[in-house]
Length: 532
Image (cartoon, rainbow, N blue to C red; front, side, top):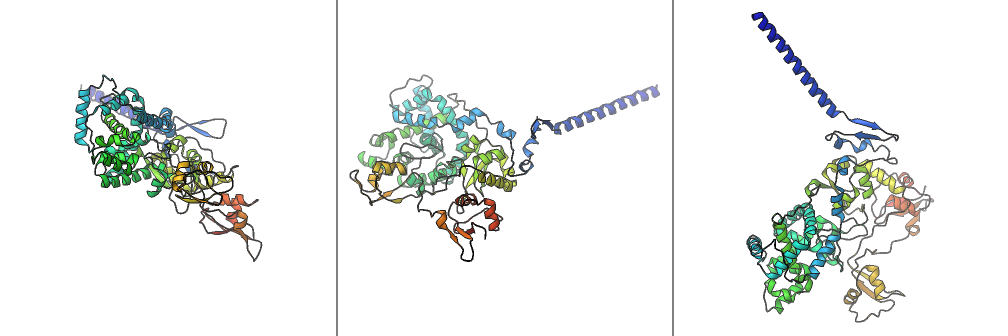
């Protein structure tokens, strides 16, 4: 009996060991299969990864596909392909700006019937907001009509703005907190620009925070033919925080700060005088410009709707890439969005959204400027690790272009213009993107008459060269010791742009003749543009 028991125990043990071995073998097979990547060969020489391991797919090095900078064949990375096309369209759509501006301008403050929000409920919620914010959010019928109008007619637009706010608000709050500004001021950017960094008003105010050209220059937001820093979300937000902080030191009241941000401190000061010295916004409101009179109610209505979004059943779509999942890389050579999209697999529309200050989808390289590209964090490591290959590819592609890239020109805040034959105020105004009335005001002109040779002061909105650049033929001088021509590098020059100025000269010629290991140039540098 004992022998039978022992035999049975032995058999059970054997079966158990066998089962364990099978399970272990099964796990090993599953683990191995998880790591196996199935390559599907097609007619072309390109290898396509079918059903890639999600952990492995992001580790494919850019250097694996960049072998020859003249023969780059790169496809989208899987992560970029997953970005929802509908969300991408929301990011690049600008119609919200017109919608918000129109609603402010046309607000009639008539009673709006909206049964889902009883007046007593609204009063109670406004009282709570008033208690926890530095703004005067006391109930009044005008504010009620704006809130109900937004809820009744603008719900879809508000949901889209809430989706965009998920990207922008963390960055806004970071900058506002740095300057000790109430975080609720973030809603100001919705009223100003509908969170569109490329928004432009009819008078030229630009960006998320709607800076005029001269005000932007005062805050180091520079404009060139390639870049408008008023459209840079980070730089413009810091400039806005600085400006708002200064306004608060003047008025000591955040309602008046909002009004002065929109219409200027001068208009608010005049409204205070006309009201008999009152510093309460609702008391001076009727003395403010019409646009500003509707501006603060629009801000407060936006604040209410965002703070009580859940109670009104708003269901915004959330961004695939939050702000804090992006990072910046300083650009060391000129790159286009097409280059970056092709190399990193980042969708071009996403690049435009993340980098709105580059007007031509080109990131220039200028010696005394620090231009950066913002990318999803999943792309930055691969970009940094393969910078040399990326710049070589970009340089080769630019050299082979049929059409040259536009020249980099900085916009000055003020120029002196000499009137020429055939000029008239309307023509000059159109050339520099300004209004005729502005030209008259800047130059104390009572009529439209101007004379040839007369000088006008202009604050242009369009980029213009500040000095006449010398032509290539006059810039290149012949060395007395031989037939070698020497060219003096000018601001914005690249080897490719210089090569185009001298027929038969290539980028490689310039590098060989000047024994150059890098393509970097500095203004004033002298280089050979002929063999000698």
